[in-house]
Image (cartoon, rainbow, N blue to C red; front, top):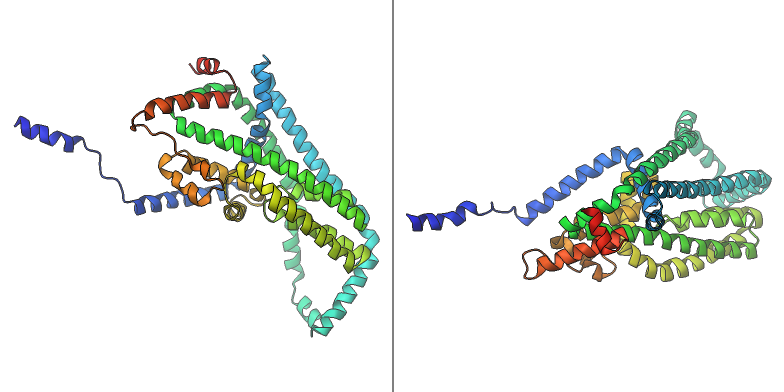
Length: 398
């Protein structure tokens, strides 16, 4: 009986059989789809909060530096809030100045716009689109339908103000949360070093991404302004600001920044100037954004260009227009949570990572020597995240 009992004990304590991989993947994708649909319904809350998190991550090294300089943690956190507010104020001031300059100059081109419309109408007649056909198409438009379509545009000011208030409040509370960040990271690094490393990579990647996008946005903006001045396009500084702001939108930001100056060049000087604007923008942006910038962005973003483009479409659908701005940081977060934090899922990096070294596996518990290496890596993660010497970081988390 003892032999029978000994033989039965392993089966009694054996873990339940795991689900087939197909079922696991299907359930995981279904759960992720439900979460994304919920986020889409809450995009007015999720998007501003995630933007605030990004802003705090960008300026957090300064906060850590102030803490190491013996500045009280609360004052260091408030310095973070102040810097973020200055950045937001500068962003909206640049946008408001650009719009104001454009509104002031556009009435002076009314005659040129009418002439271009007439020339375009004559050209369309050669294609068989006579004025009668155009009037018939325009008559099909219902005035009430046009007004209902344009109505949301007049509420943009309210939406922007609501967004700004939400972002500011979220920045304040996120900054307050960073006061206890070292203790949390110390505990996380000891208990879940793999997850802590994934979050470290996410924060570092997000910070590098915004820095790289800002630096290259400034370079592109300056070169675009020089090209527009040479061509003689009015409001060159305004279009430089637009090029800088739209550089934060991956893949399609270039087109958004190109269309307005090309149209103004067309109205001001004719087709030749508009063509030169398109050529100059395409050459400058192709060389800088397609050849030079990806060498730096690839290291910070860590995903392939195709994944970057698909993430733009996906996060625009989930989070609205702000999702286009936050597409790559949001993709980095999902990648950190679902791929980098799980050593068994890191093979996915072979398909989506721009640098295959990103998918290097961590030592796993149960492998000979893995526990010791994992613990040592956990201590290294605490040091990297906290920015304090190893002993001090360990004591803070104790």
